[in-house]
Image 1 (tube, helix red, strand yellow):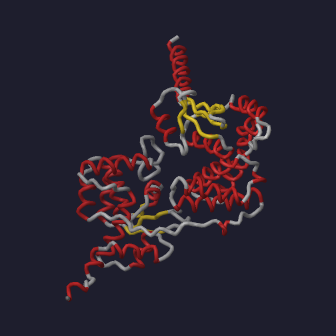
Image 2 (cartoon, one colour):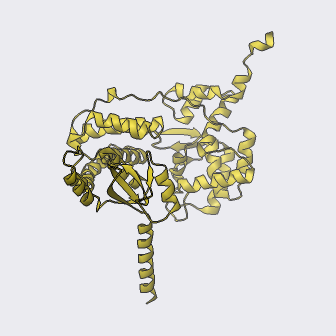
Image 3 (cartoon, helix red, strand yellow):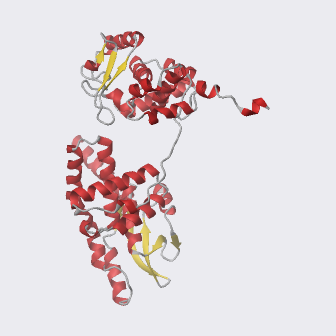
Length: 400
């Protein structure tokens, strides 16, 4: 009886939550113009979302926010609502829209059938997206790349609302301009879009988009964020939990990426030769990283206390790796305890490792090997943040 009550309460609670997140799109004529009305139950988050929409207006007579109707605007609005995690309900939109078209036969707008079929049109992409995802996984693209490529392709296809065979170069250029540049998304995301679209149409449609005609952003050259040795020491010493401390220690001591640390198996620690084996890292490459006797002894203490079975650093469940999100929270708490107000990320520890090596006189070629960089140009960027390298420069003002 209690279980039935709980199930019933939970069902209606979820139903109410979904209804609260629902945004209803209605069609009406206002001031002799076709409009998209936006209706929703009062919710501060939804209201703020709606107010940020481009060209949003409010009608007192209709008691709702609205946009002037355009085919592309309607499609974009539906997709933006979905992207934000809300539920667009435009089931009744086509009925009022159909009456409007009958009264205005000379109006050059899309048909009401197109509105009805818009949602079903997006379903035709599912098979293509599944095949594309399977292709990427078979080619052994990283999980993050597979996820990003599939997401950006889905957004692009849904935005066009067209059958895949009818999608053209112009659609890609307009999407790039309106959704990527218009919303001020990053240059890396723009490149991901172009690369994903190129690959998708080559594999799924066996035709090439003229990607060369799409302008790519200038490649950003940002300096790596680096902590001083004192700051690193404060962060590491502020952590009392041995497992948490050893994860951050290993990242800094070996210059690892977050994913590389979490993918370490017990067998990857070669204590006899004082090496750590990093398997199938970025670019599907293996590499060796030397580990000091001090780090090996600390790892032994950690092993005796936690006794991991498979992974070097396991989560709460035995046999499962520690999660990246939990590790980020560990660092966040350590920063609070160390009273460091910088927006430090786990990758800052890797940057600091490389910079401190350079400052201690280590050759760039060895640093490149330790970090797993393909090109020495990538490693050269640390010369721009090395205090020792910069301090050796004699400034001309001193000679005046």
